[in-house]
Length: 427
Image 1 (cartoon, helix red, strand yellow):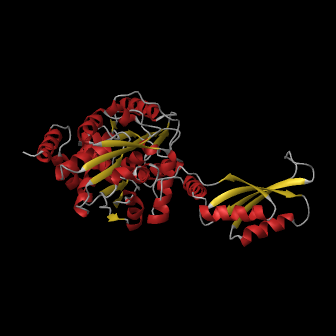
Image 2 (tube, one colour):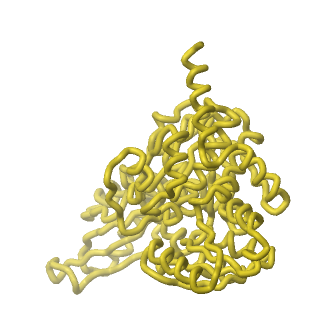
Image 3 (cartoon, one colour):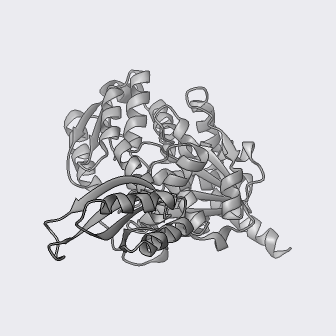
């Protein structure tokens, strides 16, 4: 027997001993059919060219609540007893699980209470309440919200619906892999975000059952490497906040940790710059809005091209619930890092016509002035000296360099205050 065949058999044996089986996921697919959108999985020609691999994106941000969490939440709600439905359910969530529970509980006539931590983006709080759930904002951290949710569950006899560490929820999330591999059977690698681990657990089990040789790669925020630390056996250090708040989980599930350890081939950590860049790329290339967690898979591929070159990769855009102001800031920051938006500090003489000359020089060089701040008082320059901070839009980094050279050639001292950041993934 060849080594490939032995590996194949070992994979099958591992999946047969897990707490969630392929038949559970297939049953979930039948249960939620017609109540969940079968979202498209399409190959992005542009992103594939950039990455040096074939990238097939599944747009779970097109679900009604703009996130994959509906699948597991609905599967669990459908599995409740009549008494549990009558009493109602409670969940703790930073947003997407909350919306999935609230929306489908309302559809099924089940009272729902959601406890959300104080740092939850307002768009997620508002949408959850709009679905008819009772929303309680409590605690600085997700763990605080979870503790309060358990207390309320005991006080009011509500069923606690866990966001990831539940086999029925995991089975619901696994239906994504069934759809992806049916639509794009050539996929040989799945790159999946990890928070608590419910999504990757369900998808990995389903994918390995369909194709035991498929490669499963998890992605976590470098600021919240909880599952990576659990699998690798080290004590993690956590950041204060991450753009990918949907996967900023300090304690992975017990069930999910067992599953990830058995069937996930690798876990990659991505930094905040990579996450911001991936969000921007999805907007600019695919014209789709993704939250930080939803862009994590693309961030991993663009940050580590050597791991994925030439492969046929499936990415899950798992959520699109992002605050509009935050999205605007991300897009502008990405323009700055690419050298397409820059702030220049230019020293001029405090004489009539100097500012006009600077502006004309920039215009002649093809720059578009977005904003000007003129400083006369709060400066250490001589009394007859002043400077201006000018925000300029350029075409790219080369254009930026040419523009600053022309400003200097016109006799002005120019300093770049904010411009291209070389830590961006290569294009």
